[in-house]
Picture: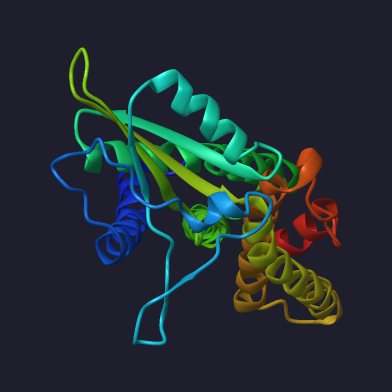
Length: 259
């Protein structure tokens, strides 16, 4: 699993982006009984969120966050209809204040990705078998880099879409983080496919080389880990939970790293 500090760093980056979008698009008045305008994504729940044109600037900005008050159960039911799980991955954060609720929502949404990436890397490590000491240390470093890279790519378009404020029996804020599966898939799939073209070439180069330099092995290991981390994230957003078949099996890669 990712270290707690790494998770906090990633959530802070996502939260900063969300907060910037909120600051540009919404003003939460003290009287929260009035609902803000319907977000563009709610008008097109089956597709990507529609950007809102900033007046006079020509720059596209994110759709505003919808702030609601009232009956909590009704809001949750409506959110499920607006963001059906077959099209969206969501995370719900609950806290007394809005900032903490948003942080928790983003962290909750990231959990299935973190779990999938960690599981895939653990499985591949077992398949490779024992590695020389220097490569074992390199593996630990590269897996951390690969996880962060895959999470950042997969969650690039996540946003806090709705805020619900419950006043009774005590003030409670519910934040709903939303990620369109299709948007994330379009970011992840081309990168995995590009790495799938590189990986067999790297394997052939090492197999045909008389002097298998450490730099070659490190490059192969780095490409393999990055590919598998991104593919695990891709499998999380795709229907059926399946990624792209690995072009070179670990049983072929393992011996090249040990020699």
